[in-house]
Amino acid sequence: MERQHYFNKNQQNVYQVRDCFFSIADCIETMSQMPEGIINTIVTSPPYNLDKSYGEYNDNRSFSEWEELIEKVAKEAYRVLAPNGSFLLNVSPVPESKTKEIIPLDAIAYFIFKKQGYFLRNSIVWHFNNMQNCTNRLSGRWEAILWFVKDIQNYKFNLDDIRIPYITKNDKRLEGGTGRNPTDTWNYDIPQSDFWYFDRVNNMTKNKLGITEHPCIYPTPMIERIIKMTTDKGDIVFDPFLGSGTTLIAAQNLGRIGLGTELDAKYKDIIIKRVNNESILPMF
Ligand SMILES: C[S@@+](CC[C@H](N)C(=O)[O-])C[C@H]1O[C@@H](n2cnc3c(N)ncnc32)[C@H](O)[C@@H]1O
Image (tube, rainbow, N blue to C red; front, side, top):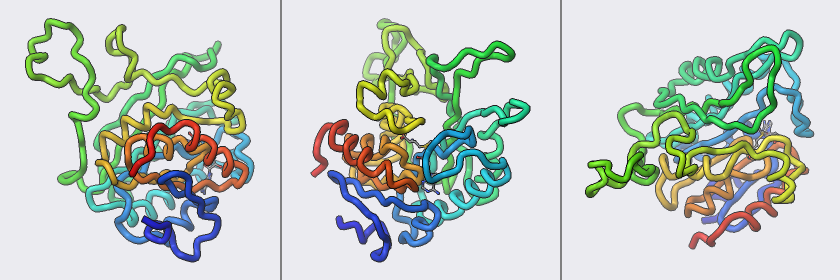
C-alpha cells in the first residue's frame, strides 16, 4: 500500500520506514485529513503535563488545556477508527506542578472519551518497579492503559493470542488448554515468567539502544501485547503521539501496518533508526 491510502495526498513530511509510515506533523490536523474508518487500533501515550522537554510541544500547561488536547484527539480518532476499532490510551496519575497534588489523568480521560461515544472495555494496570522513591507519599508504581472501543457489541479481542502460562504444572486446564487470561493487572503473576511484567524504559536501556534523546519511551513488548490483542495481521495501527517510534516497531514485528504522527522533527531520524534496528522481520 502507498502512503496516499492513509495520509492525505497533500500531507507534508511523510516518511516510510520498512512497512510503516509516519508524518512529522500535528496529530489532530493529520487525523482530520485521514479517510474515515481506516484504523483498526490506536495505541498511544500522550504527554502527561509533567514539563518534559519534548521540544516543539510545551508540556507545562494548565490541565484544562491538556483536557482540550485529549478531547480533540478522542474526537478525530473516533472518525478514523473502524466500526470495530479500539483506542488504548496510556496515562498516569501525575503530580500537579505547584501543590504536588495527584491528578488522576485516567479518570479525567475516561469522561472525555465517554462524551465522544466510546465505551471502556478494561482499565488495565501496568505495574513496574523502576521509578523514583517518594518520601512524603506512597511511591507511584503503576500507570493506566484505558481500553476504549467504539462498539461494545463488536470489537476485536484475540484472547488466544495473548494467553499466559498456567500457574502450576498440574493445572487441570493444561489438558488441551492454551493458557490463561492475562487479566487486567499486567504484573508478575508467577515468578518463573516475566512475560507480562513490563519495566519502564530506564536510562540504562536507553543508553544501550542509543536512544537517549527521548524522555518517555514505553516498552515494546507491552505494545506488542496490545496489538496482538486487538488486531489481526495486515491491520492498521496508529499512534498519534509517536515519540521515538515504539508503536511502529511493535506493529512491524507483528506484521501490522504501523502509522504515526510526531510533532517534533528532531525525532524523525530516531524513529527511522529504531524501526530499522529494533524490528525483527520484514512484513511481506
Ligand atoms: C509521551 S511521548 C510518546 C512516547 C512514545 N510512546 C515512545 O515510546 O517513544 C509524547 C509525544 O507526543 C508528541 N506530541 C505532542 N503533541 C503532539 C501533537 N499535537 N501531534 C503529534 N505529536 C505530538 C511529543 O513531541 C512527544 O514526543
